[in-house]
Length: 480
Image (cartoon, rainbow, N blue to C red):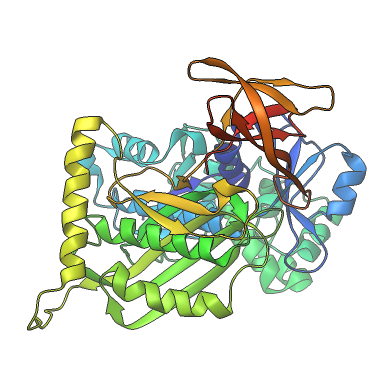
């Protein structure tokens, strides 16, 4: 049985580099705080001497200036699931082992691709290059894993029918055995698999029991574990970054509704019913928040799914500010016939007409033209955070954005920092009167806001609202 091991080393770090490419040359590590004492789960190449499983305190003692990133396990698992799905496009026998490790059955597929080398190349090309997959091919799982583990990125290592000579020079710490057995083998002077394979198996069994037998068999290249293919599952994944990190429930619900519109508009979900939804909230300086929603009869539209998710979130929602939302629809089944109502659905018809009008306008203008306005924080002192707009057309990929974002403006200041003149569309305009002024300092927000506002009237009677950002030392014109 020919098996390929597809190995993505440091998967967590690679996912984080996708998000923050500016950290590529910086010392950074990823820590998991969800299980009591914080521990390191991965580290960037610039961090040396830090291994997965090490306590965060110990890692920081070695690298005091290292950047600590919070582990986002749902995102890492999601990328790995996408990897497995991509591999299933090449072979119908794909097994997902631990995070970053997959096994692929190759038997019978060589002729479809023009040989084993071309088949392996198809596996490599099915995955994004930034994941830098390593591939090993052998007659069993373990030698294939060692071939991938000791190979180079974007290169395949093929093991012959007799894997023992290939395995012989490799260290025994690649063996999937307990630390106690590994330490015992080292104390006996057995540092390589060749040394373990040269031992009489009964001696290892007497000393270490079944683990000793397992170590000897694997060192010989004997691995009778079967390939356990995962079932192919269709899923639709949508994600949207929020315009600002916020703990506002209404903002989160607006984001969820936007994701549901997009997900059910995707070809893979159109006309079908979803049995479950998974919502992941990426939080500011906190572990990701994840919940699953199961629909007993399935849902085939945003209108059906939204009330279920909304009711749950109203009682169970993240407490920390949310930066990004990710929604996955799964258990997709065929749509069922619906009983037609006596009267037409006026609201649904209006939505369809709006979406069609938006598509026509977008084709002419080259971008989204119609937006749906939602009040998310009417109490917020910053006007641009009170109302958000999202594209009417669910197929549009534009993100949600504030309705009234402030614009930079040039202002001439007086001796006490008050505005004396402002530069508008037709040049400088003197300020005739300051009608009102107020300030706020929201220092606790993820992106703190500290502003001095002025509502001024020009000599021509025109009213303008200005503010000076204390942190940036810049003036803005506020659209209200």
